[in-house]
Length: 328
Image 1: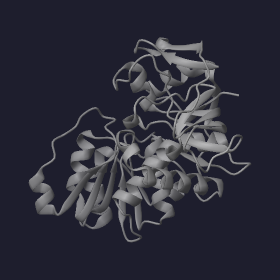
Image 2 (image 1 turned 45 degrees about the vertical axis):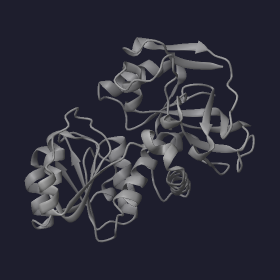
Image 3 (image 1 turned 90 degrees about the vertical axis):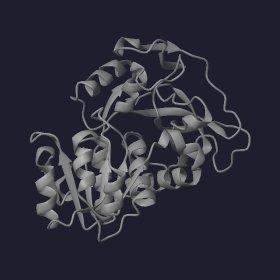
Image 4 (image 1 turned 120 degrees about the horizontal axis):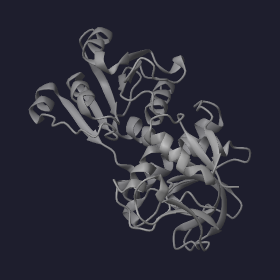
């Protein structure tokens, strides 16, 4: 089978297109004939060595396709079924492997799709959708009266988080962007969009000084510090990443005096420990997309051979909201 392999982490030149043996599923696993593999910024971190994976490895943590073979102890899946799967259950050992014609997934990280499902669109939304769903529903326990502040609203994770919050619906969904020219998803998602440079005063103006109930934070840096301080009593700050590269210290006394809660979610680190939450979230997200309730933008689709180009665009911040690789 064709696959992209990283033997020595580094620049986009380290992405090599090679021929590998077709894998066989182990206990609890299934193999998938991959139709589409999503590409995200985290893949560039794996490739560069910023998030170390044992080498050699094949990047890619979200795929759609058809079940090829079912391993021992697997129920609920049959060959030829359409499925979506996440490949970031790193707590079970090495995974990833989406940039290949055949990928191996644990059955708890997969969901059956109906015939006719938009495989490219679902592959482009799977990992961000599951992360956003768990953050909003399991951690933040989002309510219809809550005001939600989404940092990094122009990114893929920020965008789908805003759309899921709007569907709930939250009382207010405020998107934060870094620059005036940043693209955000359809206006119906957001009740308000504010610039990061004006975050401090904007939250006060929008909430009458009360603050927001939920902060979704994949950004870190100064925005994290300001957003945490703008939580209303019983507010929940959910950390999903640190795109800024700066992790500021947050005061325990500030959490105490403000009656605020700080939580984090690293799906790849805990997925194997919370299979029910992952499975439920994946099924919910793909169902909402298939029924047209969660309207995800169509991703850019490129062949596997152009994977280095996609990685470079992600690092240059010139990539579209989502790109998927076509394997068939």
